[in-house]
Amino acid sequence: MDLLKKLFPYSFGTKDVANLVIKTIIYIVVTAVLGAVIGLSTLLVAWIPVVGLLVAWLLGLVSSLAGIYCLAGIVVMFLDYFKVLK
Image 1 (cartoon, helix red, strand yellow):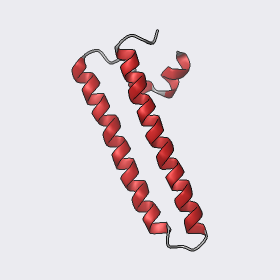
Image 2 (tube, one colour; image 1 turned 135 degrees about the vertical axis):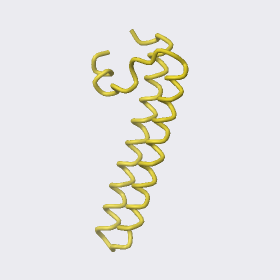
Image 3 (cartoon, helix red, strand yellow; image 1 turned 60 degrees about the vertical axis):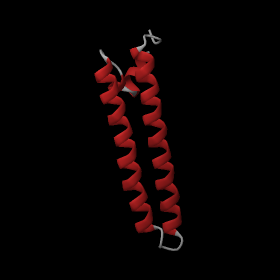
C-alpha cells in the first residue's frame, strides 16, 4: 500500500464524488496534453533519417507509458474511493 501511495500520490485522499470527477478529468486532460505534445515532437523529429526514427520510437514509448500511468492512477483512485484498497 505504501508503494502505491508513493507511485500515485494524487490518487489518494478523494473524499466526495465531485473531487473524484475533478481528479479523473485532470488525469484525462494531462494524458491528452502530454500525448499531443509528444505527438507534435515526434512529427518535428521524424524527418531526420535514422536518428529521427529512433527518437520518434522513444517518444512513442514515453507517450504510451504516460498513458498507462494515468490509466493506472485513475484505477487506483477509484479503488481507493470505494475502499477496496486498505
